[in-house]
Image 1 (cartoon, one colour):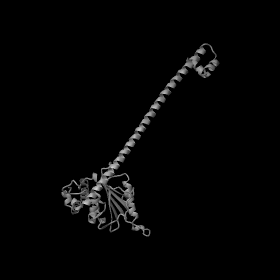
Image 2: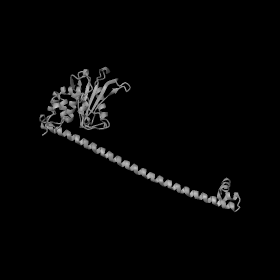
Image 3: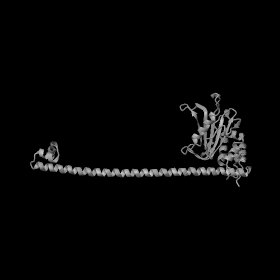
Image 4: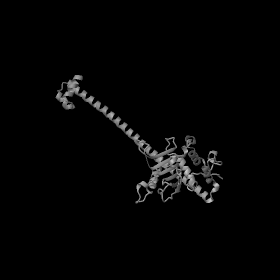
Length: 317
């Protein structure tokens, strides 16, 4: 029997962050790029209807939505699998949340920023060693000038290493909690246990805190993730195979074209050699006719050569 359940699962993630606002506040203030004077003090959860999801969203996505007392909206997502359309989807979701703040009778000055925090269990940028990616709307020439409307933070858990973020201790502990705690853990590391908030979060993930029905839901979520991963990998393998087949076909066509080109060049060279032989033979006949005393006009008529060509032959022959 496992002592802890994985906090990245839909059930446990929402138990920790979707039911305990104080834990979510501590998590967001630690991980998000918020200055101390703009830290979240209070928040309320938003229903799915207030911030709509994309139709047909993947089951590998877990999300919690809330807003603080100043009206700022926060969308927190736990994404188990990476797909090519993920970036577009988070922009779409955040934009929907931004627009839905107002009805037709309200003014734009009432709009508050929307922040998206996406925790990724897969890498989306293999060429970049950084695990923390902060995107905002900035002036490209003066990057300190920021439009506050939408901001996005993407955290790649697999790249995360605590020593790389030592200056943000609480954030490091929260990310370690998400990355390290799972069914294989029997003892919570001392660094995590010493933090009151994270210790509470770990207790909420203990298997004994869940009913048999909830544990069945927990396992069903992992089944969905495995199914999605299998489908994705199968699709990628099929695309690679189709791409290989297409590349092979193009290579065959290219080789065939090269063979035909080489054949045409050989035939051209053969025709040129035959033509050179005919010209040489014609020149020899013309010279023989001249040596026998035949008039140039007669030689021109029988050989098809011009007077100038025959005169040149006489000079060189």
